[in-house]
Amino acid sequence: MNWLARSFHKMGSPPFFYRGAKVWVFWLYVIGLLVLLVGTVWGLAFAPADRLQGDSFRIIYLHVPTAHLSQLIYIAIAVAGFVYLVWRMKMADVFIVSAVWLGAWLTAFALFSGIVWGIPTWGTGWVWDARTTSVLIQLFLFLGLIALRTAIPNSQRGALAVAVLAIVGVINIPIIKYSVDWFTTLHQPASIQIGNPISIDPSMLWPLLVNTIGLYALAAGVILYYMRINVLRRERNSEWARDTVDIS
Image 1 (cartoon, one colour):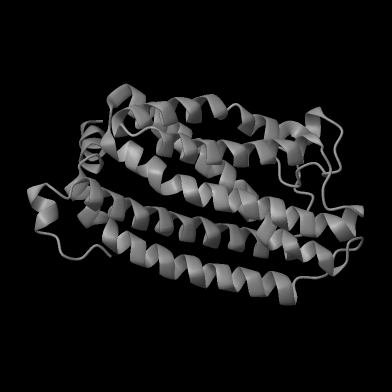
Image 2 (image 1 turned 30 degrees about the vertical axis):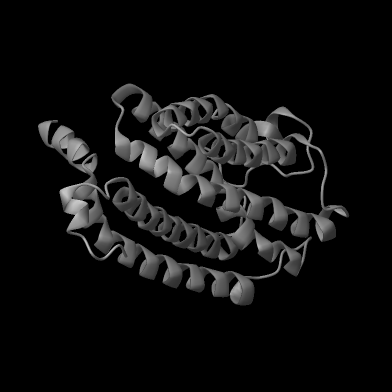
């Protein structure tokens, strides 16, 4: 457990994080883009058409990974908010600042791609059911975190306020997840559930999983990239930051 504690404290050190994350950013970009390209081509060109929806279902290869990742980012932000509240770890706040915009964009894209998918499938692009409404609330939460941080000039107070809002807002995640089970919605139940048989054919499942892995890797690279930039900006007056020339 001592090595785990040491690693935890090391990652909380801005210079250690800044230097160590550079190689991760490069390889996460490369792996993420390549895997995402393979999964997208596989899903759009080689996976069979759905028996009922035809080719319109192929947007699943972008919509589902994006929606899931946006929720995961919000959960990660809430965890980082808890870490900041308890330990005042600066890197936790750096993560929140670096990840919140990506989470907002992914949520917006999930809503947009859902509208595109819903028009040929449901005959309408939007319904105020539990799933779409709770995802829209998630977008508002992301935007609220951004606005709250911008509105408070004191960075420490802003970080505390954002951490609290992130933790409170995480209650929306299980509502998104289980809305199709708790309420009557146009969305179908989850095709992949722990402990239950997978209800999606393997020929469609594998490109979906590949795209999910690729998008997760690419998003991790983007977050680490902006974390390095934000670390350098915050530590610009420190000796190690003044000695640093490359912020890539």
